[in-house]
Picture 1 (cartoon, rainbow, N blue to C red):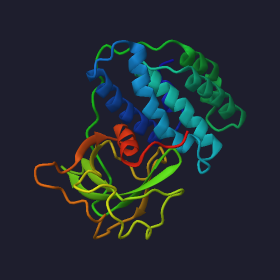
Picture 2 (cartoon, rainbow, N blue to C red):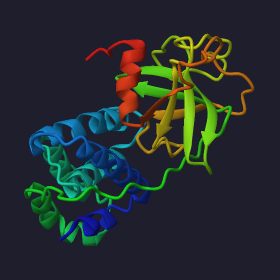
Picture 3 (cartoon, rainbow, N blue to C red):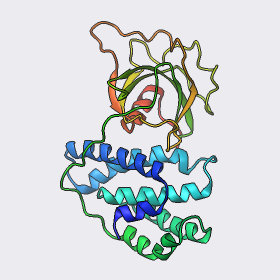
Picture 4 (cartoon, helix red, strand yellow):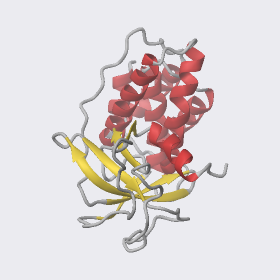
Length: 260
C-alpha cells in the first residue's frame, strides 16, 4: 500500500489535487524556514491546513460522504509529506469505516480498507528534500468579488489584478465582515479594509473556483470598481506578498482574531 494507491481509490481527483498542491507548496515554505525540530515543523504545517479545511469539514453544505472522503485524503496527503496528527488520523480511520458502511466507494476500497487504516496509522517518513512547488495558477479574473471564510466569519475581497499568465491574483479586502457569505450587492461601494493598499494581497495558491475547501466563494464577477480609498501611497508598496495558507494569518491581523 502506498499513498497514491489510497488516493486513487477515493475517486476524488479535485479534492486530492488541491490538497496535494497546497501541501507541497506549504511544506516547502516551512522547510525553508528551518524549524528546530520535526514536531515544530508539523505544528506550523498543520494549523493553517486544518483551519482552511474546516470550512468544508465543519460546514453544513457538504454531504457526509464528501467529508469522509476528504478526511481520508487529508490524512493521506499529510502522511505523504511526513506529517501526522493523532486527531486527523482517528477521524480518517473512522471515515474509512463510514465509507464502507454506506457503500460509498468501490469494492476495491472496501477490500483494502483494513490495509488503508493500518497505513494511515503507521509513522510517516519525514521529508529530507523540499517538495517541488506546483506551477502558480489561478482561475480568478479581474473584477471578481469573493467571500473568504475564516472561523465562521466571512470577508469580502475584490480581485484587483491577475499576474503572469493566469498565475497569481492580487485581491483587496472590503471593510467590515459578515455572519454569512455576502450577497453580490453588499460589498459594493464599501471602503477598503485599510487605506494605502494595506488591504491588498498578492496571493500564491488562490487557484480554484469553486474552491474544494469551501473557504473561497464567488460573490460577483466583472465588477468595474472595487473597494474605495485603498490606493497605494508612493514609496509604501503596492501590496503584501502572501500565499493561501498565510493569508489566514493576514486576515486576522487585518480584521482581528476570530472567536474560538
